[in-house]
Amino acid sequence: MHSTARRARRGLAAGCGAAAALSLTLAAPAQAAPPQAEPTVVGDLAYGPATPGNLLDLYIPDARGGRDGLPLVIWHSGSAWFSNDVKTGEQALDVVEEFTGRGYAVAAINVRSSFDARFPAQGHDVRAAVRYLRENAGRYGLDPDRFAFMGNSSGGWSAAFAATTSDILELPGETGVDGTSSAVQVAVPFFPPTDFLSMDTFAAENDLPMQPGIYPHDAPDSPESRLISCPGEVFPTQLVSIQACPEETEAADPSSYIEGEEIPIWVLHGLADPLLPYNQSQLVYDTTTAAGNEGRFTLVPGAGHSVDDIIGARVSTTWMTNHVGAERVVNRAGPSWYDIDRFLQSGFARAERAAR
Image 1: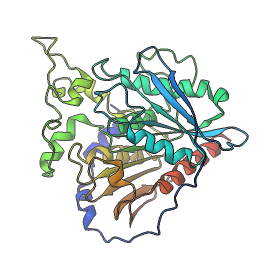
Image 2 (image 1 turned 90 degrees about the vertical axis):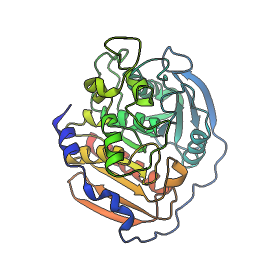
Image 3 (image 1 turned 45 degrees about the vertical axis):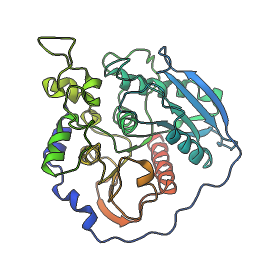
Image 4 (image 1 turned 180 degrees about the vertical axis):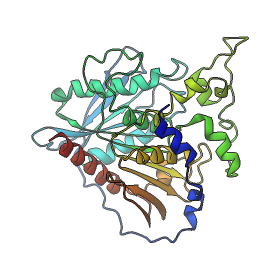
């Protein structure tokens, strides 16, 4: 694990739980996406050999993408890594409608479930989907230099993993890279699980009401334990707690890949999330900004484990650090899709300036 990740864990801000007590100011109403014609759908594109775990649907709007093609949003819906077919779910289709209406192409992707394969397969799938879309950008009118990744819950983990490994050409054990970049230019994870080993301790220390069945996260049958598939010493086919294999578990933490320059990332979390404690999002923000990178972290009082709870919420608190390290805190209405759109555009512009 990189030293920046360790420092961020030791320095996790103690005052974050008091975010709801800060003074709050409502912002102006958000701008809605303009109406657009129905997008062209190219379904069941195979970016890898596993079916249905390596399929994606691409939605192409009737819009001009400029000389270099359309910007792309890659979306992965969460399932606690239990499902390998989430690309046509309600949340994915909501994102498709919102962002094709804003002139983006949208790729809704599947990755292999924890029943199909153990980590790092899911991380490799995330990156393989990015490479497939980049290699086929010309065919579908995409701009290969304007890729954004978003997702919720375990899909938020996918977005965070894509973000923090964007500066790595090839991960250990990864195949099929062939020199194509797996990088995205900006990422927006909603309530991602990140540091699996700290979830239960943080929830207990802060008296957070976690939902039975998912919590505790270090139980042998938890989503995180199934993802890591930590084998028992006596009975190797019987899974045990992730606490028994910390090195393998830490390798699944997107924060552990942060070292030096990273892409802009905006992580969002509800203070009333009953499945994942909010420190999971804060750790990504703390780690990347400690390394000098641009990041945002939004906490929404009363919001649960739901994108709808966060987008357009009445109030929220956002910590923002730019690329020169200046942090500010904004208390305002919760983020809208318009705000997310502006953040993506800012990330694309930053990547373009860096490439000059």
